[in-house]
Length: 212
Image (cartoon, rainbow, N blue to C red; front, side, top):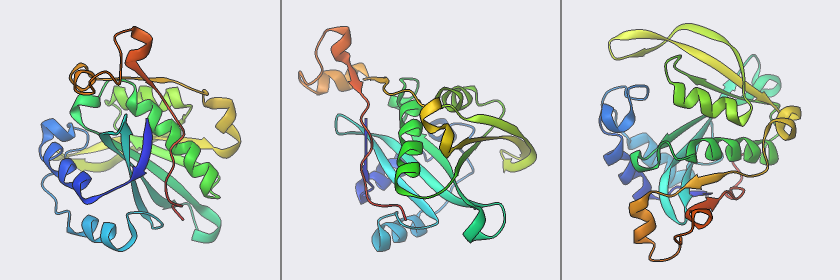
């Protein structure tokens, strides 16, 4: 698994994959929204070095989804800034370990390339897949934010998680694996072999532009 900067074709793929509740999942479907601002941010700053940032998630060069990190503040910006992370995987890559790896490597990336002390994440209390991912990465549940998100015609609570800089090496495992979808494995034409240990892609530390 690797990160790389977003390109226009990635946004086209996300528009197609996430254009309805089935593709976006019930926890990320907020109705139809324009992507003009997103594309302008890609054109002007590559979706990096801003308050809202994005990288593509790839496995063996195949687009698997995206990770995002956004500025959050608990007071004055110069003394209270942290990052909040989010992830969106294409349907074929869900449930294969990509989400855990991508969020783990994004945390490592942010603590390596920015000076924040805290990375946080939020999710719906019923989103057990994301809860498991965050807890595998080492995030600590801090509490429940009541009626914080309007979605699907009603208000939803959110769970707040965080991971601190000095918890990074204590909480994050050194390596994990991603299961490659069978169809993609066939399309690779031998890049991934038939033995079980060859049908998994070793995660590598994401590389990309400085997020600022």
